[in-house]
Length: 408
Image: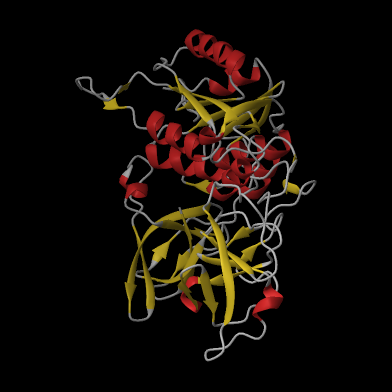
């Protein structure tokens, strides 16, 4: 077995900046039904073609009145008005109201012409054709005005906004059934290695189950991308080249899992270099040191380490921001909490370590318990709530020291 050491390592920040500079956002748009628009990036400015609501409407059950006729109303001196009809939500009033008149209205019903306020039912008493008004109201009290939500000609939503349930609701309020959104980033995940087999198959000597296709594939979906997981590819150059060429044809990003290190069978750097420009190979991080990145035209190629903890950590640090940028999403601000380290932790000088931890509440706030075992263990992340960054110039974090835990 021949092993060649890395020629040089980039810092985490420099590697990430180099990767994101090389990435080109997806420009293509597609139209989708509103129920499929959640989490998508809006592809155009939406200008309202109507007022929302399109009419003045009652904000509660009661009586539509001319507000000025209620100004003298009081508990012991009610104003008497003639009831001339009623209107429910979804109906159109058959007539307006004149002086000395009122009309029963249900919540959401259009106000009849001539009225400018609603007296709540609990402040009235109806007898025969007359209603007694016991409380005065100012103009447009208990009325939702036409265009008070969205006005005709107003920019309701801006291009580039991420569609949340409330923003989808705003589109529905404008009568839209479909919306133009940015196409999802297409990511091919290609597992490599003679030692891995798909879950569900029988394990034989020396084999392990493929974990990375599922962790990386679900991470892509979590970031708003669309993933295609390919069949397992062997550690032979011709197989890697064939899979790469096919994946480039139909993807924006191609991710190989495994084969990015420096052993004799780790051919990815040569394969990537044959179709594009190597951006970097090797980063000063732990775990994830063997990370490989290249660019072929406007396609991005990544070689992710094969060990599960290393693969997923690398993907959180590099693949996630890459998909967010290419998909037009705003780069997410990391959520974090402060905690005290539960025990002393040593680190390697010269390596920017991302130490996974589990959080526990106590009387003093949070305790951070390290859960990282080694790069090959998936529980190093599955049992973690987040991670602590230990800079490359720090080799020791003491028990009880306050640290920032960035949450997954």
